[in-house]
Amino acid sequence: AQRVTQPEKLLSVFKGAPVELKCNYSYSGSPELFWYVQYSRQRLQLLLRHISRESIKGFTADLNKGETSFHLKKPFAQEEDSAMYYCALTGGSARQLTFGSGTQLTVLP
Amino acid sequence: DAGVIQSPRHEVTEMGQEVTLRCKPISGHDYLFWYRQTMMRGLELLIYFNNNVPIDDSGMPEDRFSAKMPNASFSTLKIQPSEPRDSAVYFCASRPHGQGKSYGYTFGSGTRLTVV
Image (cartoon, rainbow over all chains, first blue to last red; front, side, top):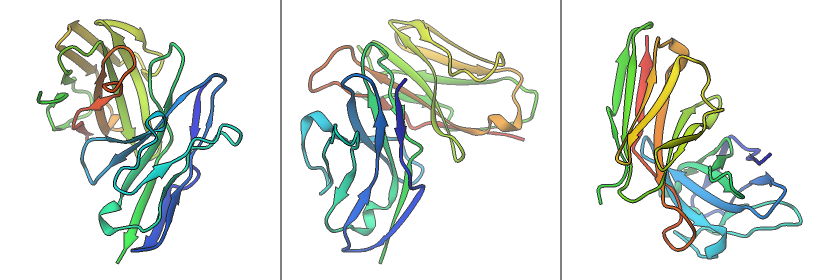
């Protein structure tokens, strides 16, 4: 069974501070990992895919297969980063995204 | 492309009434998913279709929930009868088949359902 765990429901940081949103996963094969972001009352948007190894809006995420983690990081948080962040995975023939429970990030001025 | 289109954006209904949520996926996408979002449980997959055929409905909470996809451009999620605990935001998403740069899900704006 595939499972995604985001241990923090709420996270607050000050503007300019580093931020790390934790994500751990459980999957027997080789999953694809994603981060989705949802700004207030808007649709979910894809932020990052692990296979593209890119940086979007200053965010990066590295897949650590040894620790089965895919933490999202940004060195200097901005107020506009305040949103709900979901870690998700998909793998095998299942085709569906399995989401973590989400972390609400608030960046304080 | 206008993206995944859901209607209505908001629905308020009385307990016991039938509710129908609608979704138009992106043209050419082979997969369509229905998710439910609540504060307590986050995002839960209810059901998904591949080429209009329901593949996995194990996430549908009860027999009161049903979903159909009569053609490639339209899907419905119906709740009959509705209950207050069904209040949530329901998202529809679609994705194309296979890998590549276009791989990935596109979500609709969601339908915020309130059952009073």
